[in-house]
Image (cartoon, rainbow, N blue to C red; front, top):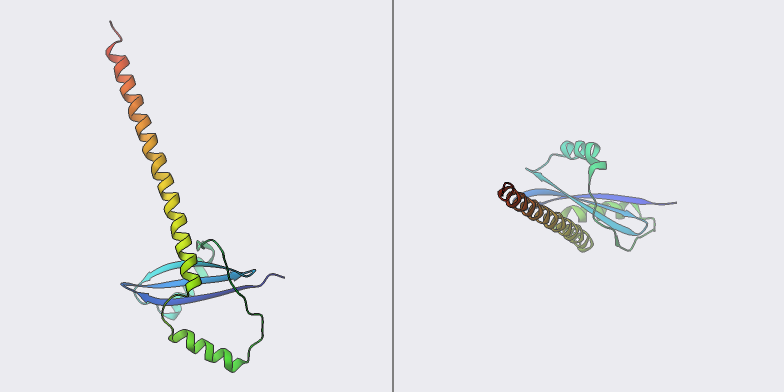
Length: 138
């Protein structure tokens, strides 16, 4: 049976508030980053998660260690309290976000190069057509 664990970390990263969605599935971590702008309220975050959970673009999965032990409820409360006090993104999350950013960058460069080549081809065809029109009547 596949177990999927999700978490959301909301933090302030100059000059905006961002949300980092972490999803661990089959021992692999995927991350999505969302910019909120102004400090979001709890009900705004809940509404965002309910409306846009399926629209999130997660990064490529990175291998991570998964704990399968049951924890004492008081230990869980302490861990949650620690997570609320910690600022910043976990290193695995940062790696996954960086991987996603590089993937988007390479896709953008590829599309840009194709557009430049298409524009150069169009201009060349236009020059050839003008050249033919000049010599049409002679």
